[in-house]
Image (tube, rainbow, N blue to C red; front, top):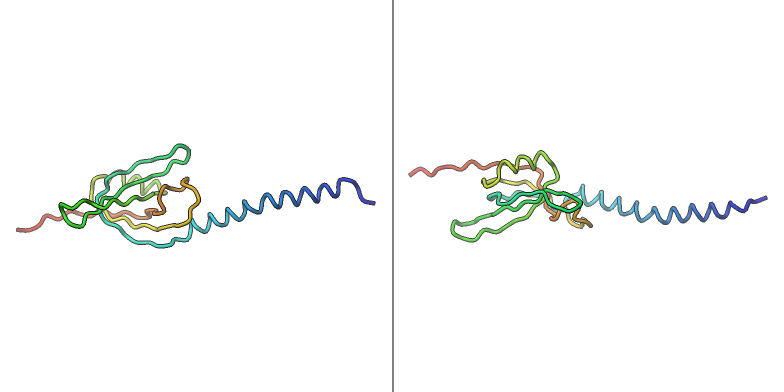
Length: 133
């Protein structure tokens, strides 16, 4: 003998499964794009701007002025920092010449992880040398 609640429970389990499947696929995709880097490298220049931005999701965003030749307009490169320790170091180096090591992550579906796809993982200050005459 079958009860009248048995088909209802089966329908409810199917509905919950259908609702959870897109969430699980999205979580797997997000985990992949945040942990696998498309590219990585280093950029050198002067740290021009660095601030914590966002209405709901606060992220550290910066701007590096890369100059090739003195007197030429610099190329501006925007980046994101997820680590608070690196952000504190960058705040101390504002206006100085630095080298940033970064990883590029493409396909991030939201700006809650950063406004750019370039995430800084390491920072190094460049000592300015005085030319000998």
